[in-house]
Image (cartoon, rainbow over all chains, first blue to last red):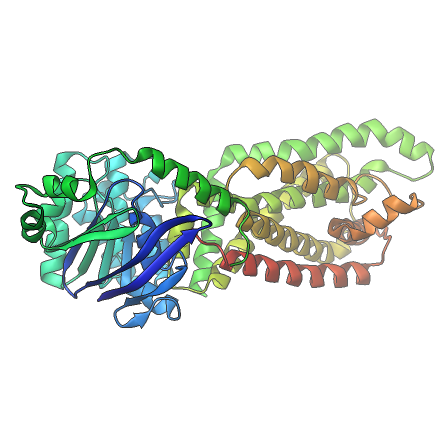
Length: 263
Length: 247
């Protein structure tokens, strides 16, 4: 369903993603793990056509993401790491714009919006502006929105960040249900290892822009001779904190982005 | 079509809900109209130029549209900051349509602001000729499109709010002051004359003014031709830069 070959992204001297390759099969829940600044979000941005790779290819459902951008975009839904809702608009309006942008016919769009708002327990607040929502409600709305156009692939970039255990649990139950019943392929990143362990069928670990291991949770534990996925993760990526390196490369990236030159 | 419509509608909804913004954005034109209008009125009349309010009102209306449309374009920075830009950019529609929808929405908002100020001008004593209202409206629309597209183009290459003040002080204010909105372009020193001719708003102010009070510097046809060409150029540039945005 997703095929990544020799993907590279460099910002000036900084290599954010260095030659990674992997495949996500149809109907699979695939977890993409890594410390802060390892290249997870950069990778997701390239997979979702928001960022052009320096080199390498991304294939979504057999289509080259670079040349068939819009066809690829129709096939996936994405829940971004940081908010992407219009705060001034209501929950319902946010859903409606999304449906319209994805070419969902009006009647179906309204039906599905009502159904999804119900499902994510937002129905009673459908006409409130998003700026009045709590963090958890916003997250739920983003997820509901990502599902509106019945995507074949769902990208979840740290979807449970800042959510309480109840909401997290509910979210993963729902994702698993979607995966099972509608065969939606799921590509997720998270810092909560127990979540990845619980839902993901296969896992890839990225560090310093390179994939350091991939396989099932059991395989990773076996490979590192550890008991839990968390231990396996630490064994693979080391236990030193990455924030500094990440900040420096972030700064560089932001500098490079400030006056964007044609690339 | 749905894409253009839904994003146009979004701009309008955001506008209607931001009441504080509506009121705030009317303050500046009002200040110019009343402060300059009544302050310089007597001098202007003594110099044999007739009523200053008559002369100034079209300029203030055009200014309102200028500020409002540049701001609408720049709002793209807010969309980037608050994340909604991602939602638009990842959608399976050509970016050109997104840009057109946003621009038309922003332009519509700017025109509404212009009309509100026009009404205030009438209350303050402005008496336009009613027969050419459609022509005046057309010029307001062209100004709105040119500058919303310009704002979008600028916001497409800016990352954050840092550059915003820079744009206001070194682009928008000069565009306003050099446009002949507050003084006649007749008999200007050569440098000023050249600058005024380079300023897109000069043709907008002139078009609105010739429609509303029959006082033209460049001629209405020239105004119309220049603004039409510029709106196409800025739409094209804006669309190009917008389509290049990467996150």
